[in-house]
Length: 396
Image 1: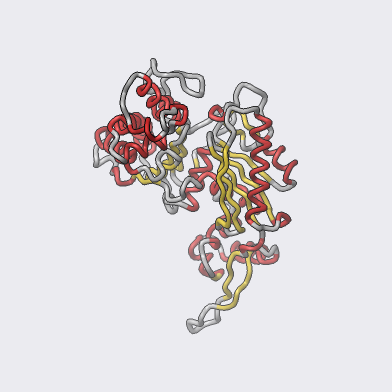
Image 2: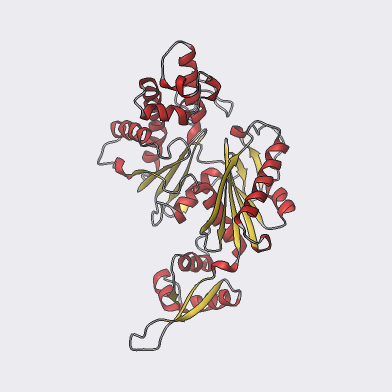
């Protein structure tokens, strides 16, 4: 996963960013030997992955032959199976999004139904995209949970209601159904890879990504390398940092986790509890008195309209999220912190509360809070990260 030392992938990742480039420029900018560049570029042209497109303007010597990535060499499917919604994208071989779609994830339903509906949604999205199914080279699936990527297994996915059962062979299931190479990866890693290759993390060697939705997860790139999870040692569980020993029960089964105070489901539950005790809020009007329809998104909408109770709840959530992010900053000293996920996307108010809390916790000279930014990938960092990984897998 994310094997950037592979010369072939180094070349392709570099060429993918360019409209046209010469072999000389590739050797210069990637710092690879001339022989290595010639060997791999010629091989990739033969495989129809790279294509020659003519010559550069003469600078007095021999004209350089220009090449570019053949974006029509195939198509890829990237999927993020989240706690409430599933995001699906179809890309060309340059990883440019051609079609995207969002559907319901069916959390806490029978696991067979969750995956039947997932495969159905992928099928429908392929049809809607108009892409020739025979030209799709692979499917990358990002899942919120404990994933064994090497073996293609879902160990647990607590926010989907999948736990305490034999591992689910999701890679095998995908390949059996769609008849193309597939892989599964945890959302934490997928989001971080997506930001590194396609988002605000480009060129950043020390990066922390925090995904804030129903669950809260994080990924880290330290000194240019992804901090990886293994089956035995899962990393990135920022949402399960203990913030109060006597706190509410979390979806993981423990008590007092960050997620149990500041995740989307927790925020909605706090509002429901306060309204049931007689507190007043604009949220009550927005859901027409039907408390079961309260979501973190609705609370954010009310807060933006000046609702005091909603602002109070979001500010408290921001202070708890600060604990998690501050710990990550102190541990990894990143050059940038990218926040993504349904709860933070387009939520400048929550970002303000988080920054205020972090500025109180960490001196400005140690970390500049302006380095905390909201993702520009519109919640599609997960499927884009899965696309990057399946792209690499197909190329191998």
